[in-house]
Image (cartoon, rainbow, N blue to C red; front, side, top):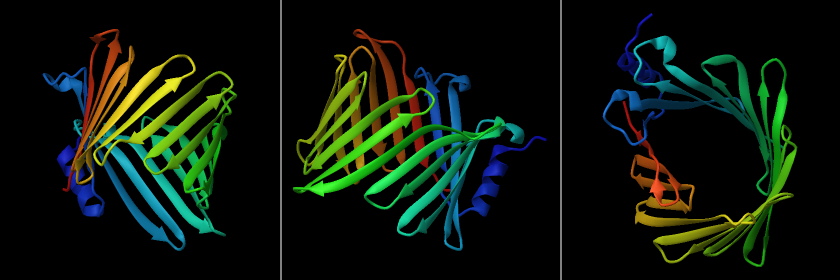
Length: 260
């Protein structure tokens, strides 16, 4: 059956008090033809059933006129409080493969949290497990976040130290380590260099534009230049791979929160 995108969006607007988001991705920075443009509309909603909070959403392809090809991703999340812990389960289904779902299970009591990422299909399989413990000392906040990948058997730990205008994050595994030092230079500027044990270096610069708007640029030599510009309801992201002094191509994503 054929169905117009406008008709479907009108139905979503009537059925929900949520605010859809329109996202447009442009490959290689090309705006010349529609083949390079992939518009997506994300719609979310929420409800409550007893003590359980329910959230749900769907990503819809906005360029197609065939209703069967419109949904891209469908997800739902249920949360509740149990003995001081906020527990939640989130499931996400790829509309192209309805036989399996990605599952996230979380529990949080403020200082301690546990997260399990799994998948369902022919069987329930766990892919990653992680925990986070936070505590305050001498006016600073320290968090310890051990992580384990069940599939690859890789393990690492992230230790973060946050005090005033300075944040230090150390990520360490058996094979590699990295350190990021984030410093708030003044009210409008923040810089965050990262150094890895393999000799890699990157630098992030964030400029506040006021009213929660910002411009963030991250340079990783011989790898990429990433820029994100937030301006009111608009968010523009640009990724440009770098080889030496040459920029090979660009991927542009533009997102705006819209009301229908």
